[in-house]
Image 1 (cartoon, rainbow, N blue to C red):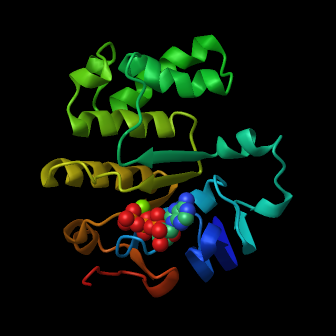
Image 2 (cartoon, rainbow, N blue to C red; image 1 turned 45 degrees about the vertical axis):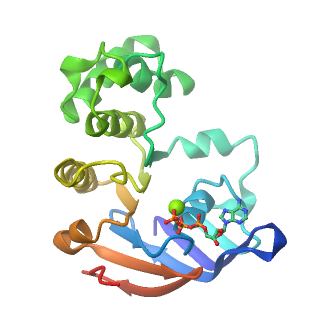
Amino acid sequence: MMITLKNVTKEYNKGNIGLEDVSLDIAKGEFVFIVGKSGSGKTTLMKLLQKELDVTSGQIIVNGQDYKKLTQRNLPKFRRQMGMVFQDFRLLKDRTIFENVAFAQQVVEVPHRYIKHQVENMLEMVGLKDRMNAFPNELSGGEQQRVAIARALVNHPVLLLADEPTGNLDPVTAKGIMELLSEINKSGTTVLVVTHNKELVNEMGKRVILIEDGHIEQDEIRGSYDI
Ligand SMILES: Nc1ncnc2c1ncn2[C@@H]1O[C@H](COP(=O)(O)OP(=O)(O)OP(=O)(O)O)[C@@H](O)[C@H]1O
Ligand SMILES: [Mg+2]
C-alpha cells in the first residue's frame, strides 16, 4: 500500500472535528479523487498526509513509514518523496520559472550540474521550457499551475498530493491540468486530487472518495460525483 489510515481522528482545538475515525487504503499507483462539501475534511486529510498536522488518534502509514515513528529530524527527507500542488500555486514571485523549479532541488542538495538538466526536462514535460526565464506574473494561471506541478515532480516523488489544483482555472485549462496529473499517474506516481470539479471527476472514471462531516461516506472504484 502507498497509504493506510487506521481509525484516524483529527480534532482541532475547541472540539472542532476535521476527520473522525477514518480508515482507508490506497495502493501504489492509484489515482484517487477526494470530493465533498466545503468543511467536510478534505484539506485536513491532505495536511495529515503531509504531516503538516498530527493525528489526534489512529495510525497513518505512507510508503511503509508509520508517522508515529517519524522523527522531526527525518521529516524533511521523508517529505521529499511527496510532491504537493495547491489551489493558489505558491510560486516565488521574484524568481524565474526555472528558478522556481530549481529551488526544490537546491533545497534537497542535488548536485549543481544535474539541476539544469532535470529542471529543463520537467519544464519540457509541462510544455513550458520556452518560458523558463519568465517570472510567474508573466504567466497565465494555468501556466503557473503547470510550473507548480513541474516543481512538485522534479524530485521524482512516489506520491503527489494536489489540493484543488484546478480551483482557480477555467474549464479547458482545468481539464489540461487534470490530464497532466493523469499522465504523471500513468508513469507510476500515486496521485491524490482534492477537487470540486464534478464534470472532470465524472469524465475521468477514477476512484472517488466522498468525505462528509469528517467521515468517508462513499468510496467507489470508478466513481462519480453527483451530490
Ligand atoms: N486550523 C483549524 N482550526 C480549527 N478548525 C479547523 C481548522 N482547519 C479546519 N478546521 C475545521 O475542520 C473541518 C474540516 O476542514 P477542512 O479544511 O479539512 O475542509 P475542506 O473539506 O478542505 O473544505 P473546503 O472544500 O472548503 O476546502 C471544518 O469544520 C473546519 O472548520
Ligand atoms: Mg480544503
